[in-house]
Length: 142
Image (tube, rainbow, N blue to C red; front, side):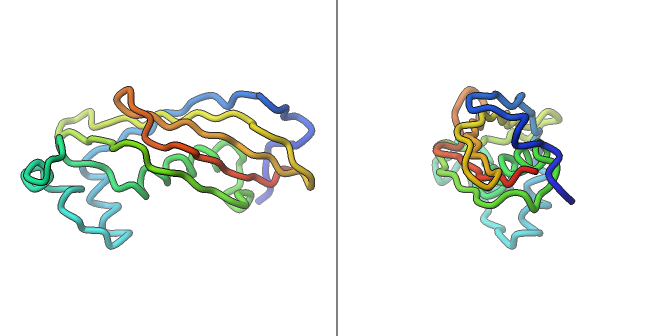
């Protein structure tokens, strides 16, 4: 695969339209199986509340993955992501209902680098809280 976004067609300051990713309890159970992280705060409401959480929360790495998904969906090639990092700034609380929670991710082209690479600054929010901070990806464009 090759990136479908062309370096010459992006500009610093260009916004990448937001995307919404729904998170339900079933997603957290599947992620726990895939990652091996079976911490009960991610699936057991009673336990999560006994340790002071408002409810079950999404795995931090699951939340980070949604930011990565946003970048790869935009660029068109998962292999085009050269670097990706975040800090976790808030929890994604996932209620036990049919709606679950929503993580909204948006981005902006922060900088154009040499060799057709760009830095994407991401914003990820859930329930009016910023859930990732200092989220950046370096992407190799064509």
